[in-house]
Length: 267
Image 1: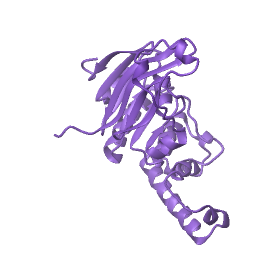
Image 2 (image 1 turned 120 degrees about the vertical axis):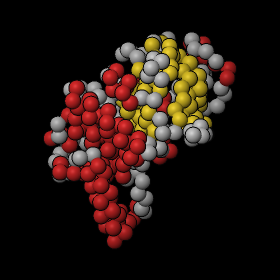
Image 3 (image 1 turned 30 degrees about the vertical axis):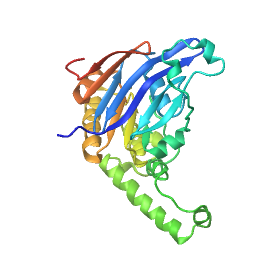
C-alpha cells in the first residue's frame, strides 16, 4: 500500500508557563486513517499538547502543520525571551495563532476529560450544535425564519438523528443530556464532535470514569469511527488495555518530554 498522507505534525512544540516547561520540544506526527495514542503519567503535558493543537494555548515555540500547511507557529518573545528554557528558540520567527473556532473550521474536533455537554439541552440539540459548524445560511434567513431556514432545520434534524442512530442514542433524542448515563454522555460528546465533520478527531481520555465493560465498548466504537466515518484519531488515555487494543502507534510523554514512540508491541 502507498504511504498514507501525513495529516498532523508537531515541530519542536514547547509550552512554557512562567518557569515551568509543560511540553518540551515535542515532535509528533499522525498519518491519515491512523489511531495514534499519547500516553504518560498525570502532569506529563498531554492535555497541554492538545490545547496547543486546538488553539487554546499559543505554543511558546514551534509549529503545527495540518493537511500540509502550517497552521500554528510561535517563538519566545517579550519576557519569555529571557525566561525560555526550551530548545530551538531561533528556529521560528512567525506568529500564527488561530482561535479554537478557526481550528474547528479547519477540521479538527476534540472532546474533553470532563465531559462538556449542554446539560439542559436535549440529546438531539447537542448534536445540532455541532452541525451548525457545517451548515451555512445567511443571518437574515435565520432571524426571519424564512423557508430556507425551515428547510435547513429539517435537514439538521435528519442529519442529527442519523448520527444518533449510529451511536445508539436515537431513542434518547428528546432526553436532556444530563439524564443520560455516563457512558452514553461520553458517546454523545463524541457524536457532537463528529457532527462538525472533522478530518482529525482528538479524544482527551475518552475512557475516564468508565467501567471495564464500557471501556471495551468504547474501544470497539473508536475503531468503528475510524473505519465507518474514515476519521483519523489522536487520543490521550490512561487505560492501557484500550490503548494497546486500538492504537496503530503510541507516543509516551513524561515531564513534557517524549521518551518513547512506536507500535504497541514496541512500547
